Amino acid sequence: MAETATSLGATAVVVAERLGLTKRLVKRIDGSDGAEVAGAATGIERHAVGPGETLLVAIGEAELPAPGYDADTGTLVVEISSSQVVFRLSGEKAQAVVAKAAAIDLDDRHFPVLASAVCRFGAYRVLLHRAEANSYDLHVDRSLGKALRDYLLDLGAEFGVTEG
Picture 1 (spheres, one colour):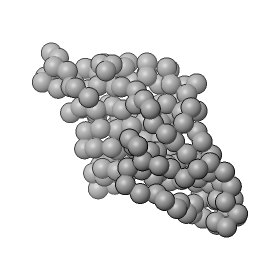
Picture 2 (cartoon, helix red, strand yellow):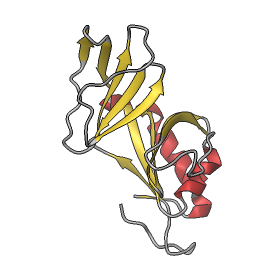
Picture 3 (tube, rainbow, N blue to C red):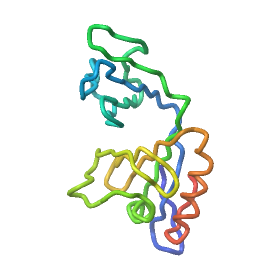
Picture 4 (cartoon, rainbow, N blue to C red):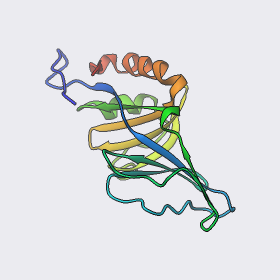
């Protein structure tokens, strides 16, 4: 994602929708705490989204477990790629923009690169993922995608947020 020069300095913050991601929700339905995920490997992001629930996101050509119920492990895998949209907020001031609305401590010691958390982001419930030092992914229900994008653009106006 290219960063854009603005009157605010050499780098602006860019918000862009991440397209083509495959997402599966893995839910433990036997009452245990963790969703054990067979086959989670390189190229797969793992996000704990609730008790016994893990969201898997395939990056590139990585393969995710097939949707369905596995009686041996007590897990249910559900395809949710089309139910959510993901926006990446990146640039030198991305953390400042996220800090304006996220109800979470973004300090590097508490929210390092690759950390994720379900949290409030303004009026929205999002899965916030710190993809890189200056890059955050926000996962939200598809029906709220346009509203969240507009909110990000308004929220970050003082930091030079542009759509990319």
